[in-house]
Length: 98
Length: 354
Image (cartoon, rainbow over all chains, first blue to last red; front, top):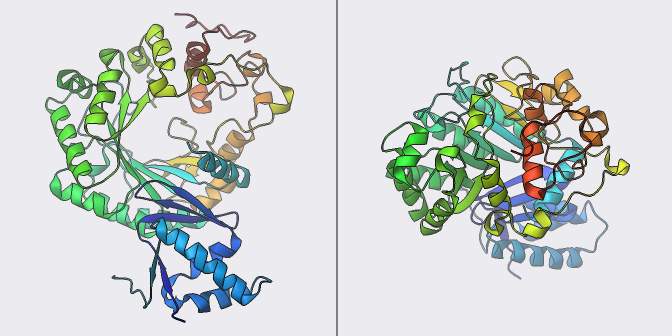
């Protein structure tokens, strides 16, 4: 199975508020809030750590959740954020200059 | 405001996070608007390096929205450096400008920074009236050209129509112009006193009848029936609610680093050149006094028939003479909105009805 690499878009604003990440897209001012688990994935989205590694370290090591369930949920979450333009997804590492 | 944003702002208030910060980076301006609340005397300006340190502190404090304004912020040669520093720290950045100094190169630079919005003040759709307000011939043409440049690049622009007596009734024309330029339209019907205590600018507010017309226009207020609904009777269970975001989730920092609860709230709380921002936010006696005030602490307003729905501004109340008194312009707006004269207030409200 090919792993995915994820990086936060540079065209967003983001800040942690009460344990949840608040994100606003500059393109359309859409506001998104992430729950605690999604926030952990978001914060670890450095473009070079594979999604499976992020899920293992940021979710499975912290929350009581089955790894395969966590990974499936993470894939869905990543697809949704990518569709909204706030997260970039690639089959290869995403370098900062890209 | 979306329901989600409303919920997020309420959460920030409950948590006491300075979520929304307004920074005037200069009081200098290349226009001389007749209604401006500043006298343009410079108290000094923080350097770009000082702003970088301040932005670090604001990010650590949890700030999300940062508005850069003035004066005219583009008079600062280092403004793009400051804006880039703010974006590098993941703030949602709004720029308020008269846009007269935005040419193609500046528009490119602004677009590259992914700012949330650029707010541009437009006083009339007629060049001669707009220029009469700004005091600068040709300012209308330069401003409109800049909006075109920004929109051509896909930058979101909000045309803010500050309604003055000089352009009474021009709002529909300005709204049509915003549509033509594919810019969002906002209307601001309140001319406030100058921060130095000069109240003469209030004479530039539109007559009450015009204010009533604006308050009853769906294009500006949405659902008129809901917006203009008579206030509910005062409910003692709401007497402890937070009245506005000033000092709770919002603050203002002047070009010289002086911190206030809001831009229209001349009640100094400290200076970020001398103290850490969070120290001022959490521990300033003035900030804590402002945030301690609840409806039950307002001897006149708590007895007013409009208390439940009034948009009372504590900063304007302070300028009217009492932090715990009524904000007279909001008394007037509440009357214009509901067509009901406020009753129960022990203070004579001379402007009602006008």
